[in-house]
Length: 618
Image (cartoon, rainbow, N blue to C red; front, side, top):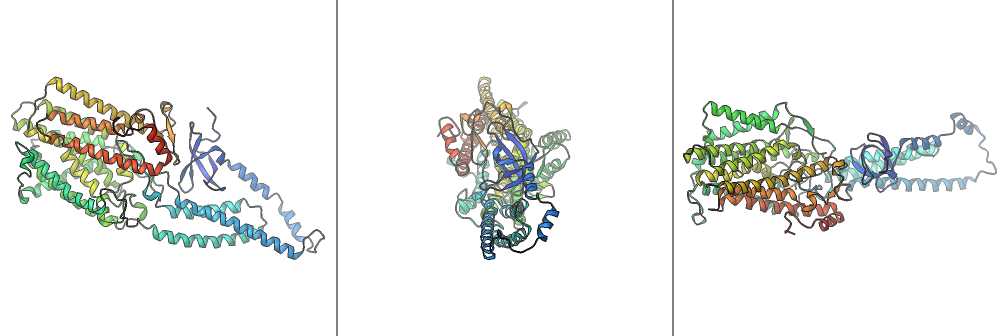
């Protein structure tokens, strides 16, 4: 293996792509396979450069010392010489023409530098790579234009002037003239920059290329999805649910709303917020934002689950009726929905005054669409990150609590001394899934939810309503529709669940390990395709089998969750159908965005890994 020339942390000068200018950079890492150095410029931009595009600082200093070899006394002596024209001196007119020619060269050179200054306006940032918890490929920002273009331009303008004068071999008077040229060019750059700043104050209103059917689509989703959720739960409560009896009898709105229930939900939310604020668990940095900053996150979700379990145990010990949750299940759903609407409204109002750098790449500028998709990327109250908190805490841990309540309700309503095997399987499988998510909480920081989508109605409704009350649908179904599962069948279902979990966990672990340290010797056997962005695409291991092995594992686990409910009705399999549709939509999203980001490398990847989610689906 060839030895590397520069060490990590060493300060050198790296050539800016597409130009002959060198800037001061810091060596971050070195890839022994591609022989590329990851370097960081002063403005926070990270690029991968070849070794011959990097030079030590000493080489520039030597050049500078060579340009000033004349001592001050010798220069003073040269100025005191007679100004009489010697035979070797050119005529005055000739000198003027030579000077004019030289000034033209200066202007041409400065024009080239000015073009270099404006080049970074169209460069893609290498921070803010986007992936999902279950392994979506990385994504680029909308239209490939980061919000920090203007900041980079001004910073590089100063750097370009610095480079052009620090290593200049011209006499001092010509340097003064050069400074005048610099000042004029800075005015030109500033004028152009102010124009660009006006257009980049926020994302322009966009009507094409919006997801979920654009504005009409998201409007229908916000109206239809809550209604569909209530109808689904009402059908599940019927003794003999059937499509022939659709729609089920609808309760009065007064029967669905109870202020006390809303207070219970609010208390639950605040309890999880208190656990989130506890100073336990390690603090890590998230992915780089468009301005180069990295937000800090405390990883204590697993501790919150343990504290919640202790609180539930104390409630049972003190005789608090946990069946209250089952008896007021629909009221709790409505309370969670009302809280979601209030939270989404607050997020939309505060995002109206958010700076451009705080906006999400997925935002469009349209009020309705941004209310749904979210306009602000990381809304925080102090250090309390609202989106990160809602992703894993109230809804995901609430899912486990709801499952436990359904287990107790089954025992009471069916007069059982112990829960059924089907209910135990459902609770165990889904508990494992939640524990896995909280144990690997750091993986959430690279997901599309955190790094790309804003926090609006879509994520708020999904986290606070859909997850706890739809993902627990199998347990809710078994309360009124018992199903006896034999041990041989249970063994097959457990084997299916473990198979899906192994695929899901191994694929995600391989992806996360490769993302953290691509040069890890343990990953040396993996084959990759290098892309123009400096990133590599895995084409072997789990990720060489199908493009989304984690999606495949997810689908297998979803099927294992539903099988304990039997085959008397399609209702318990709603989650599998919904999840398959969701993953197909995600995969299409990935395909479209990765084709735009990676270009030719993505076409090579498609040829190497032709299967998408399962081996027989192209």
